[in-house]
Amino acid sequence: MSDKISRRDFIKKSAIGIAISGSVLSSLNLEEFTKSVAGKAVRISGDDLLVKLSENPSLSKPGGSVRVNDEIMLIRKSEAEFIAVKTICTHKGCDVELEGSKFVCPCHGSEYTIEGKVTEGPAKKDLTTYPVEFDSEKGTVTIKLKDN
Image (cartoon, rainbow, N blue to C red; front, side):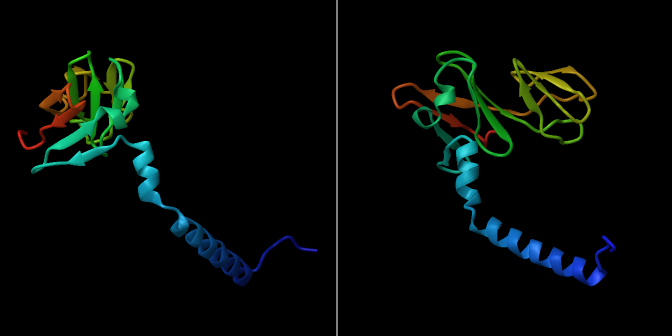
């Protein structure tokens, strides 16, 4: 008895598998899933982002961070100081990762300080940072994207 599968049976089974996978994936609410993974930020006037600390518990103490969107991470440096950093490597555009107190590019090994300054190449330019405004009374941080 042969364990080989005919080309026609392979195509039929593959098509059924693709159809089932597609229906399962379409039933998932990917927007809600990504919201639960990323930080919660709301766009306000123009291009600014407003981050509510009450909705982002990882920012409750210094050293905490949250990815606000696909390209921006907000880090709490102290009780009243925050920094917003674009997490795209200036060398070849890979997404850098926060490792302890530095950003590291997994593609080519560039390293940056928490403030986005290059400490090890091949990158030559610092990461982009954005001005932030912390309102302690409202418990919000505004990231000023338009200033860059």
